[in-house]
Image (cartoon, rainbow, N blue to C red; front, top):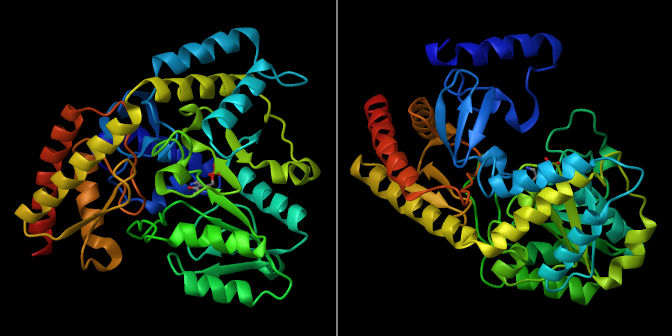
Length: 410
Ligand code: PMP
């Protein structure tokens, strides 16, 4: 066990006795590089986090997306504390619920209503149900390999699901309108919904932006065939455009699903939709013990305000661009052809010709051991709290990490 991760490993050993798998889901250490990454964290501030042993990292995962303004953001945490003093969980919502719904409708040019939930999975599944209720059709079309949550219809893993759960789901390759046309034509009773992320950001894969005309082509097909277009903006939402990533890429869906960055780390999901789907939305039962909790609504109002009045969005794009160009140059100086992909605010880096992503795993392990937290298999996230000094330090660490990969692999 690495000396720097003693407490983290001890906590994991304790967790493994009382929690199946110790830590499960996307934060499972099995998806990282064994022995290199901390499993438990103690605190975060701005763009930095500290693990359970007190080691400090520049954080390029931002809790897998939620931290968009930086950890422990003073404005958001002040709004949280003020709401918590009044109370969080009541027999019904507070005024914050209405204010936030109004805000989301106001900032989304095409949306007329909002609902709230807790997780991205909640809103993605509910959106498909609204589409079914609105169209009277069953089939959902999604991109192969795209993640829309843990629910049985779309879970990437077969455990606990049945063939029936997937019976009304069709998968098509990303960026392929001909395949989409064929999938639509093959469904005699008509497709209820096409659900897509704004760009392809599957784990274990380089990110892929929508080809020119792809999302517009999807929109046109939805209009032609009466299909509900769902944008799953859970991962990218509020990092590319305040009005949703559809605005960034030039497409307007019928329903958009948000979670992660909406409340800078406080538990909240939302779905916004068009007037034409209001009555279907009312018909599809949706509730949860904490859906109307006021503290996350207060956090989201503060978070969206702060994103609106600050230069957070262009800042993430600019720093992400600097990071990507710097990584490419550092890689080249060690003889590597590295590929950066995705929008700069949610970048990813891989090595060309790297079967099993072995070089990337070595690179990321060397980086995390030096205080830079990248992920070898999942896209990264910038926050508005990252600084040029963070990027300078990161590129210095990357230079050392590339040298280690070069020494190990040659
Ligand atoms: N959709 C996308 C695009 C996601 O990235 C995620 C989470 N990684 C989800 C849905 C599911 O969100 P949650 O984990 O909050 O249920």
